Length: 427
Image 1 (tube, rainbow, N blue to C red):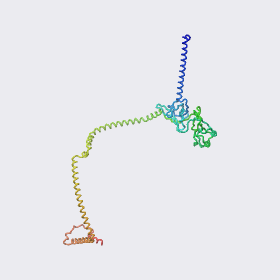
Image 2: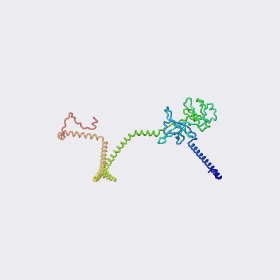
Image 3: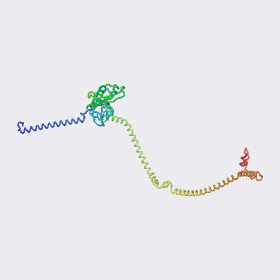
Image 4: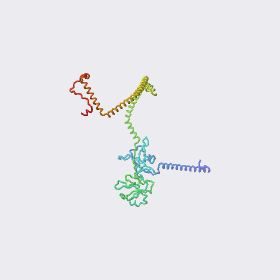
């Protein structure tokens, strides 16, 4: 049916429907574009497309486990990504792989010239590795965002607001050994700088901070240089590289291959030891079975030792114990009587000693009272001896004093007659 054949009412309704459908399609397109724009913005914000990124590079032995686009981590956070992995020139025998990466704001503020390094560490057991940067511990920030200027000494003296300006380089003495002033120090002591031989300086304006990097630190020159994203080479972070898991597995396999013969020999020795242990256990079982009667007898014998006197009854028969008790009783009686007799004997001996002491005391008193008694006794003894000798020579009594003939000796010395002590003293 043609449109001209429709009634005016139908044509009016159809035109209204067409306009409604057109507005609906337009609204859907706008909503779709808004949603897509929000998705793109959210993705860009999440991935840091709108954030400032500081470029860095490092060198590695190999690119195993590293890919372009892999995240760069700092203290466990994803702070950037790898942007380039290229091999070095064939005539470069010191470094193998060039790895360039970026760190987004504000995490590049953690990277300083001292303590910050690029570490290539193992991520999993399948050979994957990741790049991790470490927090700085000193030195200077790798990049600066303050306005950077190169001025001479006269311009430095005429800089407006001197408290805003700091040094952008290290001031070294004329001998080139000692650092007189560090970078980022206030620009106050210009005379010391002039005395060190400096005519031009690199200074930073702390009152003028940009959103992008204005300068990059050069370790060899000891100063900040103007940063140009298209011409300036990124900052170099020294690397600490860990071997990949595959290399570690290869080393482990080689070590296992070397140690495997020793392990097999050890297992053989262990098998021999186990077999010997089994035979020893079987022999020990037989010995235990044979020792069971002796153990039972010993248990029965020792069961009587838990009461007083049990050990004596076990070692000696009953008749011997009875005889021993009788012997001990008799010995006890004998000792008792001997003790009594000994007491009486000691008492009698004491009386005899007392009498002897009285006799000697009386004799002593008699000798002290009569001083010539010893002379008289000695004379009496001498006279008695002469009397006896005279009786021996008398013819009537000579036979009574006969003695056996003694063998003659070469020298017959006549006996010496007895003499008193006083006669001996007179001689």
